[in-house]
Image 1: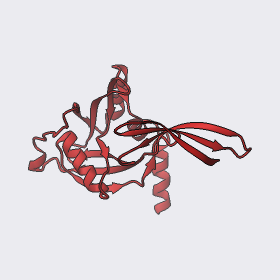
Image 2: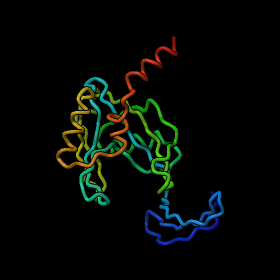
Image 3: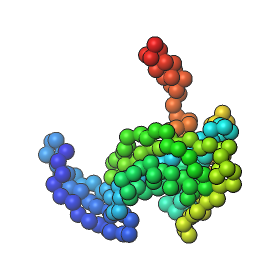
Length: 196
């Protein structure tokens, strides 16, 4: 495909809707609508774990586009270059917890047929025996209402299915990370055998 032109259909505070005109390999012209983020195209999603309690931190938040409560992970827009710092800032604001970023994924396209945003997954360990994590206090923005949910990592699938039955929308990130991989055990076994 070859991009021929871009036309702005709508420009809001956060997003721009554009119509692209493209030429296909067979020289047909097609139109495609895309959403572009205006301020930053980079987001960070935080997968945080309480080290000693072995619990995963999830959040429940009303999402206007779905008009429902969505079960997801702490996340935020990355404005600065330091993704680790943004991950810890978002974790603190949305959950009250502080931790250490152990690993970052590469920047990943989440819905590339629709939007130009890229998401980095930050794996964060939380020392739940630390004094600063004893009574975590959220620091939410005025428009945010977030419920923090601590789920035992051995019971996370059951919790997700229970929430889904109640009508809670499950974010794709939660599903991909904890439910959808039927090869997880065999994949881990194969990776271990490669290290030998």
